[in-house]
Length: 100
Image (cartoon, rainbow, N blue to C red):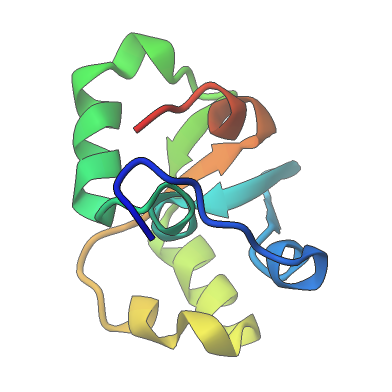
């Protein structure tokens, strides 16, 4: 995949990367980074630099408890189990408004 090229997921794969947290349908920063072909670190840098573009209804950092629940229920997120960083969750509006 070339830089700035958006990765294409099939429908089932994409649905498996959407979770319900706090009543929102969300994607994690790792998935968003994968979609845009950038590193997760880059996505998180942009959120921190442009915090006014990402209100709570667009993007939020999950809690330790939420992280544990997601990891326990999703085999493909086992790497997250050992991460000391809490991931950002992006709502539909946050995903639509992001450009990396």
